[in-house]
Image 1: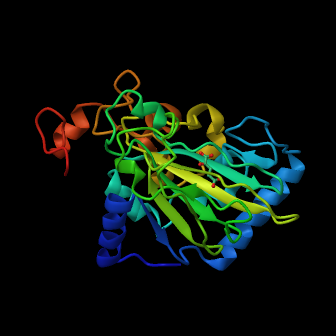
Image 2 (image 1 turned 90 degrees about the vertical axis):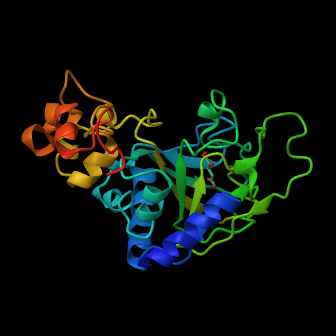
Length: 291
Ligand SMILES: O=C(O)CCC(=O)C(=O)O
């Protein structure tokens, strides 16, 4: 595992600003990589996961959503010390887990259409804009140009256009993400990218997208309904916070004045809208929001 000290975090942030992405080499402990890959392949068998057959999800790709409800092994991912400190600096500590998807690209898969992960929000904001999503793509197998390593366009998070516009891809440099199992690419949600074609006869490419969004944005995968509350009750406080069980900036997401976590888990996650942030001095109207 890479322990991220301040100079390294600043380097990664600089790369994300400039190029739209950074790669944390050797980020993940080898035993965690093996454990996650084993869990994914076991669940694929047990749950009879088949390609979903859309152009976004693929015709030879096994995808699984809502991972935190499926196996306790996945709880280590959103909190990982080699990734989360970078994401928290791009967004802020109130960021949310937007979703986690296992993406196992099989032989014969075609290229996924190029897109930005925050394309839904880009329709409402003028590009380029601040990231409305930050994606960490975890390689659980080696990623190569042949087995479906993610294709991406460096610097495209700064483009005013989106990749679906006619001719948008004509004059851009498309790279294939090649990285060893255990490395993680972290990228700005507006970066143009897509899963690669798998031209190998028999090599699968297993990756997991762990995606985060600002605390004021709707999560792509709904954890409040997707993760049974007795399962969520076993999660750490920080993981519950990342799922949105506390309030963003002391107000966003409240349920009749209480945090969602207080409604579901009681005192452990209690927070009262307006009052608690005023007492902390971080209230939106009267305090220092950044404290
Ligand atoms: O599998 C990949 O390499 C990228 C997947 C992706 O970008 C997506 O599904 O949104």
